Image 1 (spheres, rainbow, N blue to C red):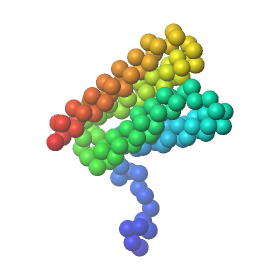
Image 2 (cartoon, rainbow, N blue to C red; image 1 turned 30 degrees about the horizontal axis):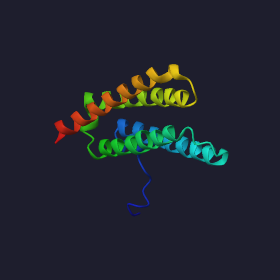
Image 3 (tube, rainbow, N blue to C red; image 1 turned 30 degrees about the vertical axis):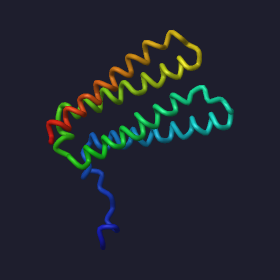
Image 4 (cartoon, rainbow, N blue to C red; image 1 turned 180 degrees about the vertical axis):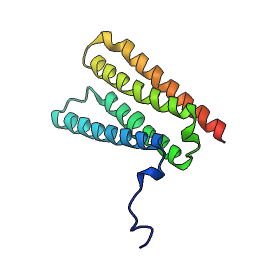
Length: 134
């Protein structure tokens, strides 16, 4: 049996990395579905939502998950936990509010700010965790 024949063991990946990878793939699929819907309808009103889903969801969550997988000791830190909590709380709030705002609901604008602030605080915690680990 070679290393390529061995089954993948999710226990070898820190829990925070698994959370980030799973969330990232959900955002990947959501972004793909939204892109298909926009293309099929010819209505690109939500292109900003589409971009944020892919960049802050799929790409950023995937990359931070990879960092936690490569640096499992960093994934044990309080900063890493705060990052995962705040990013995964703020992003859906921001996306829902941005969707409403771009669909004509002006009252949703504060929700964009709240979600963006929470996600940014989470990414700030990630940044501090990186700096402390290096």
